[in-house]
Image: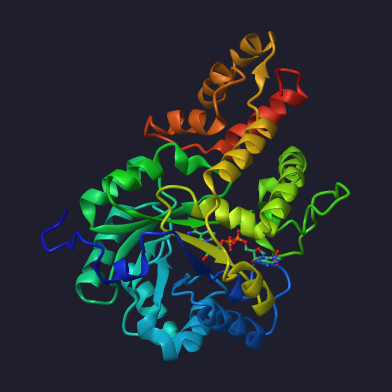
Length: 377
Ligand SMILES: NC(=O)c1ccc[n+]([C@@H]2O[C@H](COP(=O)([O-])OP(=O)(O)OC[C@H]3O[C@@H](n4cnc5c(N)ncnc54)[C@H](OP(=O)(O)O)[C@@H]3O)[C@@H](O)[C@H]2O)c1
């Protein structure tokens, strides 16, 4: 760690309690990338409703609505600036100083509580060093990193005094359980979970019975590219959701409450960043009675997910077919045994330190193997 780096969480710690909290994800209020955007007043009202419901942590990025999310948050939070934390990001190819200063102008604030490198791509270590300089200047009170491998996260901890790590986490998407969450625990990093509702899937509205086809998102909606809104993965997730609904009903919760309660009961999660587009969604998500699930309910959910997502088994033809494949495909094929979690296969590959892999890539590949009769699941 560089001389002068602050090792504590700094003023951010006031927003990170012993209990997991719900934070407001500011992507959708940027007005782009999530289908039809409501008018600006409606999106600003969503932010005010979050404040009124006691939310004190707001996550945004310069890329959300090309600055619109930051502008709106800046205006809507102005009167409460000292009572709330604003976290923004610096794009992986952006100049850290120009980016953060642009964010501060849009947010109409002298500082952000947290600035996060959005993704560690080329020259990312240099970018982190520059962000640390900006922290020393007081423009950001704390530093964070998003979407890294555990190896990058370990390296980052030797470069700058990181306070947070942010990555996708929900009851379907569990890559972080393998390496990053334990690392956060060991190194005292606050973990910020994004995609808690799987980009809207865990609201239940895209899977309402009877067995609908995958949703067709409008042009420009980033969910057109998300693999879980397509094919076999959509069907698996739909089956899980169908089995979660009676549990939610028994617990007196909405599906949203169940999905967020599951995350809030996970160890080592500091803040769950839930996105919302309008005041009605905020009111439904940030309910006063939202709470972590009990261990029994959490276990019941895990059992359903494990049952539907049982790893595939190889057929006798697989080893011969795999002989001519690339290294990564052979790596997956050799580990298919009907037991090993795809998250574990992806993490073991990532441990090697060259190209990272996530469970989604394993799933998509294994689905192709099943179609070709080389695996059964
Ligand atoms: N660091 C990163 O790389 C990264 C990446 C992604 C997200 N994030 C952060 O995490 C935040 C949350 O993740 P996310 O926005 O991707 O997804 P999310 O919280 O999993 O899903 C949010 C979406 O679900 C739908 N929704 C929410 N509440 C609803 C309700 N009550 N009824 C019906 N639909 C509802 C809305 O979309 P529709 O109404 O259009 O369905 C909303 O935009 C983001 O805003 C951002 O701050 C960070």
